[in-house]
Image 1 (cartoon, one colour):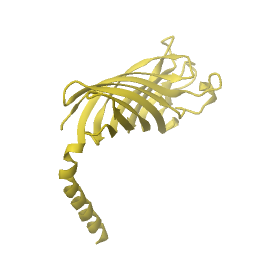
Image 2 (cartoon, helix red, strand yellow):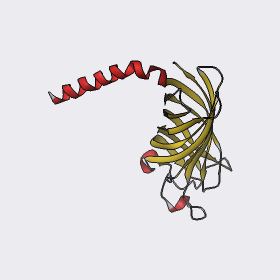
Image 3 (cartoon, one colour):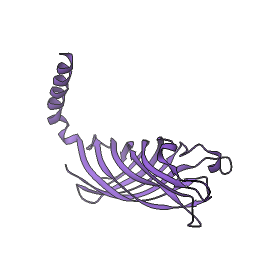
Image 4 (spheres, rainbow, N blue to C red):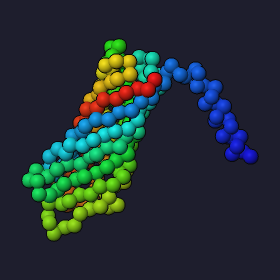
Amino acid sequence: MNKWLIIFSALLLIHSTHSIAQDHIKLGIKGGFSLSTLRGPEVGYKPGLQMGAVAILGANEPVFFQTELLLTQKGARGLDRTGNNFDLYYLEIPLMLGVEITERLSMLAGFQPALLLGGFINPLDSDQSKYRSKELNQFDYSTLIGAEFRLKDNLFLGIRYTHAYVPIKEDEMFRVNGKLPVNRLFGLYCGYYFR
């Protein structure tokens, strides 16, 4: 009985606030390209893709909250192209505070938890086997900073830098100058708001 009362109350609350919040919430999709690397080991940048959904709360205000649900390719490529290839796939949830600088330009900064969905590391030493995703840290969190520019009312472009703090694997084999590898990503994307 209590379960149905909670569900009914939640639906009633959503319905009653829908007309009030209609002008203050924007929902949309986004996708783009990224260059990721790792702090620590001798690796280069790996190109990747990023796609997902975006929601803005307080869309008509000078200060707003933006959140996203993204699928992101991360990792790095070995400089000698023979090994130390990191291929990682994450589900990310950026939580950002945005400030409108001009009518079309806004700056974003925030925090991003992420869940490793899969991937592997192919070490440079051929005597070692690949590390599978089950052997890597399953959770990551990052800070991020970026900017978005609205081309039209519903179309936008953005750029973002993300710096993680959780090592992808806590293994002495990957430690360089006392530091374990963490993800870093530069992203360029475009998106569309449905309303």
